[in-house]
Amino acid sequence: MKFLKGSYHIILGIIFLTFLGACVDELDIQTLGNEEQEPALVVEAVLTDEFITQKVYLSRSSFRLDLETDTVYNPYIPLGSRPVDSVDMEGGATVRVLGDNGVEFNFTEGDEGVYLSNQPFALEMGVGYTLEIETSNGLEYVSDPLSIQGKSELTNVYAEKAVSDNGAEGVAIYVDSEPTQGNPQFYRYTFEETYKIVSPDWSSREFVLTNYDPCALPVPTYDLQVVEKEVENRVCYNTVPSTSIEQLSTAGSPESHISKHMVRFIGKDNFIISERYSILVQQQVQSADAYSFYETLNSFSQSDNIFSQIQPGAIYANVRRKDGTNENVLGYVDAVGVSDMRLFFNFDDFFPEEELPLFPFDCNFTSIPESHPSYCAQFPEPNPCPESVIERVNIGTISYYSPYDEDLAPNATCPGPYIVVPRICGDCTLLGDNVEPDFWVEE
Image 1 (cartoon, rainbow, N blue to C red):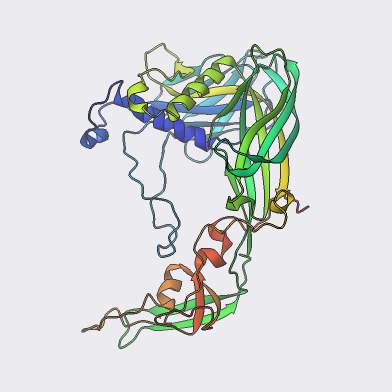
Image 2: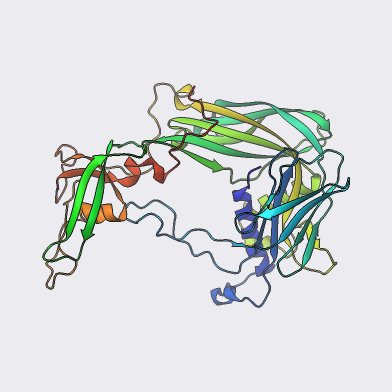
């Protein structure tokens, strides 16, 4: 089971807006840091009938504004120097799942706020379960009764060339499934997509900078070498979970099977299908209550007037205080029957002899001076040239491409001894992992 990060961030967004109240005339940013009210406990778990290590996520709602900078790659900013999303995870809790047949499964905290079952287990049809939580301050919480509502097997996951509702050409991914047990009527679809990345301006050589002192006088001191690479960074793989809520109901339909339900559309110019692409689709059979919860959540997230529509308590959570105390708990715990299936395809399977989608970053060749004036010169002269090779290698923003070639960088204002590219164009590890996934097949 994979944590549905997209849904989790939607829930946190709804939580934040819920606390603002039912009617908002003016937003006073100074009031958002008010911590007089105890942040609500947020509980997220999707327990399944797969024999796996099950997970429970605990956090606290936050009154902070998320004043993040954009996350678009900037070749002039060192990696790791920009803000990242933050969540107030809830550590130190005791978590367990109890079955009405007497079984008990205990959980241990891994990463902060992430609780893993001590041993793999699978929920069983016909058994009722509850999730119990005791937080570090001694408060106890319990979920509503949970049970698997049915099972339905995916019989096919396939892709076809298609045109979206707004006229974009691309690839649609569909599923077929057949009920196998119980009375499944409510479905949710999640997926993980993995795509191959090939660095467009890769070189087998790289810069190595040592003994760099930008403040040395009269000029900076350093040792710069161009050596053979020891780490593979031409071909990488990136895996991304779905971030949308995709559901389907067959309630009231005479047909119990599902045929050609679209779970993903990818535009033809989307870089992720440039090389080879794979998607692992998971079909979850839900309860009616879970279906309603995510439908409500989805409708709020898509609303054009979300501030005025959300009422406190509109998002029902199925976890409560064990002693009956009235406390606002957020999130949802779900018990689902699941079925998974993986699909691979290449761009030319659908668009033969067409140009591949463009790499999503500007990869122009350039040439710049190798060094620069000392940072500590007493009377520095203006430097009309861009940052030097050693400055950019020091902060990790360029990749070596070749010795200087005027044909590659004819417009360089201060050419140096090398042709360089933004690091992301010659080092795929900025976009993915250089280890091929165990499930990956080329053909």
